[in-house]
Image 1 (cartoon, rainbow over the protein chains, first blue to last red):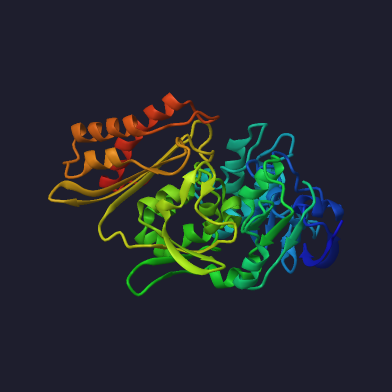
Image 2: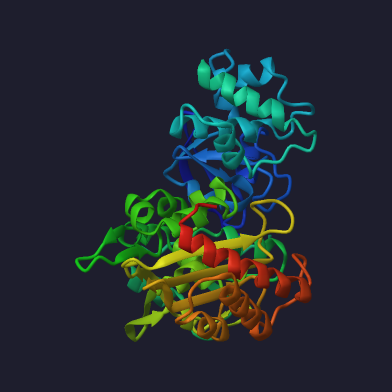
Length: 153
Length: 288
């Protein structure tokens, strides 16, 4: 089976690997022992596989791995790389904005992008922006509180 | 997914040469968000995907032309379209339609050309852009041509595009005071695939509707103009009785399909209700 050599930046570090064209971004990250992006629905609906590519959120399950060649990839694991939780991560902890935690990396990466674009979002802005992230535990009210709390920090 | 070859041409000419007029397992891929769903579902198994990312810089610009038309490069992302200042100020109906189209993540990746070429009747851009009178620029092995977007669709996931054709741009004429609205109805979550999409544009002169365009999607096998509804609206004062006549005409002429998003009779009733709402929304300019 043919593979392609790709070079990209992964959470600040230059890396390279050979990968088959039919693999998606979630599968690529698993090779680097990064499991924060999870393939859940596999259809881009749930947001559990959210990854930032060149600073923009994508669904890792709907993004071919070879497409990150030459790009900058950021996963949830980068947010506390210095040993400190990011303001959003801390806000999710403080407001208990999760129960099982499976969807949390996706919510946090999407919320991070929301706050970069709109530092003071309304409840409606937050709901719209995060409408593509599903939490089966139903922590949506706490998620909105967490995003608003992080916006104030 | 089953393995395949991915080629990454660096020019439009090279991309066209890598497509094959006879081979249905060779397809171009832009953002891939819709194509990957087909591949995961097993309804499309490629032997080769022709990735268009390396020619993207030449075909992703969104700019006004000298005569006030908006020319949208086929490789522009849906998110770029949504946030573009000219789109927001001149074609707000288009920016609004993006807000409930899937999620920010998908809009970051999905491309305008792919959303038009895919031929899925549930997509939002085809009805909105059709009602706005958009034209496609298409390049194939024998050169380039223009095609009104409303002529693109001939059936369920069927377009008039040849396997060796690529959409390079879509051009949208200015509204010039025409009113526009697009309403979509989802039967589950707000960002789900719709049960019905209905786009309307029309001019208003002396309190009467003129030159209406009514386009229905999702409920039908393809994006479809509703000519009987347009005839009912033409020259009418937009009062309740006239809107009811147009809605009944649309419900009579539409051929709806049953699917997971609603039964055919349900979608027919949705059209009867939402055509009126769309015309009213276009008239009062309210967001939705």
